[in-house]
Image (cartoon, rainbow, N blue to C red; front, side, top):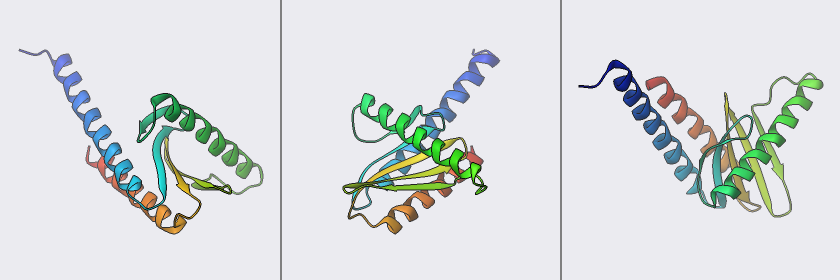
Length: 138
């Protein structure tokens, strides 16, 4: 018979597994949007939480760099009295980097230059709602 501690640990592992499943489902949904090259979820300090396509080293690097960019934008916005940043968009000649704050996490999407930014943003907003529902239900 399992002890209370073992039962609690098993419950936490199951909840963690359900959250990982929800994160991967969100990433698959965003990845299905035309023009999206990849999507990852990172902690605000840049640790990879969940990733889609790519090697783990490459995903970890993208998570760290995107979180650093988001953090710099957030600090700069605070310095000019804009308040906390909810979302950020960085466009280059070949790609866009879109980031959305999910409280203590960041949803990070890299898309081709011709991707429909509004559609990507809508997908990111839906992902945020889905994850909020999942975390409130769990």
